[in-house]
Each structure stands twice: as structure tokens, then as C-alpha cells.
Amino acid sequence: MIVVSRGKWGERTYETLKTLGFDVELVKVDESLPPIIDDPAEYGRFKDVDLAFVGPEAPLATGVSDRLWALGMPVVGPRRALAKLEWSKAHTREVMQRHGIPGNPEFMVCRAAEDL
Image (cartoon, rainbow, N blue to C red; front, side):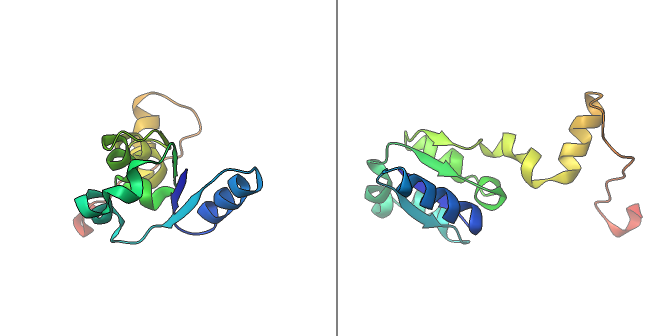
């Protein structure tokens, strides 16, 4: 197993899995991780992994789950398109509004200074 993460979430998940007796590796995310996953020379690092835990927002937003699924690895964590609910508040608010989900405060999405 691998845990692909940045920060405390990954460290806690890694420690929990280790405590439960799983053979697990922690892969800390930085800006270089997606190219590492795409690099054929690095494929050996990921090819025999049975399961990957990916999160929180940063690795999901960069598409790490999608890349690991493409390698044939089962992933606990949504693909990038679904994870957008996690890393984009504007997108989440728009989805809530479009589907009439209660609890959505009044909001305005500003994509440029002129929108203010």
C-alpha cells in the first residue's frame, strides 16, 4: 500500500495503517509528484502496489488518483473531476445551487477584478 499525501492527513493515515500491520509507504506530495508518476523510469515504484490512499485536496487536485488508476492501481480517493468538490469552493457552491441542496449561503463567483 501507499499513502500519497501532503501534511498531517497523510502522516496519520500512514501511521494508522502501519499500526494495523500493513506494509505501507508514505509518498509525500510536492509539485513534482505527477511527473514522477508519469515517468516510465519510476513505474517500478508504483507497479506492485495493491492499494493507494490519496488525499487531501492537493494531490487530488493535481490528478494523482487519475494517474494511479491509469497504472491499474485501485485508489481510495476520488478522481480529479469528483474531487473538485473538495478543492474548489466555487464549484461546490455552484453544484449545490444547481441541485437545490440546502445550506448554501448567498455567494458570487468572481473570476476577474471586473466581476467585483
